[in-house]
Image (spheres, rainbow, N blue to C red):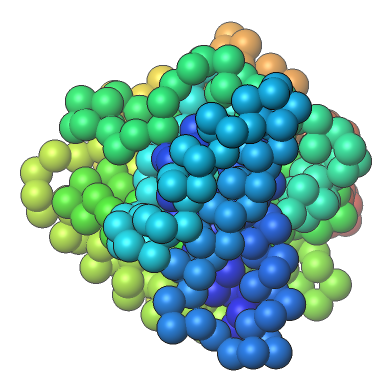
Length: 410
């Protein structure tokens, strides 16, 4: 990606937010912004960057909106009355206050509207705030571009039907909706870090975008502990990215990774973030998960991992969250501290949880603990069962290989 493309992607949410705040039409505003971005991508490399790129984009997009309004006015036979209003509303203010106001957070909250499904909120966030094309988003989620376009269009229509005004949120509104925004960013990161389907274990464009957007939220809300916690969690997890796959894209488990490949700069930043936020007293789920990730990252060797501390953190996290994946990870930590029989007993308690029924990780974890216990035959069976349930080819290959290697031992 060129420097111009990076700049345009960074500026997209601010431009869209400014145009949307003024004209109140999500779909039309996004079209106008896309036209402005296209104009910039053609003109800036040739003519050089304008003195104020953000104001330039807002002005061009506002002019496009004015043209759109004029067209609508003509169609409705009210051209003379409304065209003047549109003309006055657009370029004149574009170089002033709009270029100084960052609407990224407001736009994020709108894209994570409570009436949207998580999949729709993710798609709309990546499109409107992340600046990804519909084709890029479709490719990331392995669906046809036309399908993703329909999903994004329906999301815009849902927001329009809600009649929600685009406005900076007060503290109560922000507190109420921030959790949804962070959850969507968390889901985007996770899908990028461990893809749920397809030939690649990781989709770096998604995890990197999630980090970029979370940084933007952190800049706007620097004192929010959970925002800092989520950013720390992403950084501490992403730091292991280069060590997670081999030369052919094969999965390498955490305990088997070459830790010299971990990104120490990301680790240092993540540890600093989580240390600062935990010292403030109020502790949330993302902060605890970041603390767990920090314990893993600070171990020079896998055998140096402070599993008792990780177990204590998971026990605290379990009391705060009903997430079954937290309970599953707690079982692993308990097995590492108290032995595989303890972890297997905890898994039996989770068998009744319908949310984990059919999930490959349940079988994969059980196989791992059975392997630790020396029951290779049962471990092989569960590794194979897990392999049959995942849609990720690297995960499937890893699980099949684990079963085959245990078969050789047996």
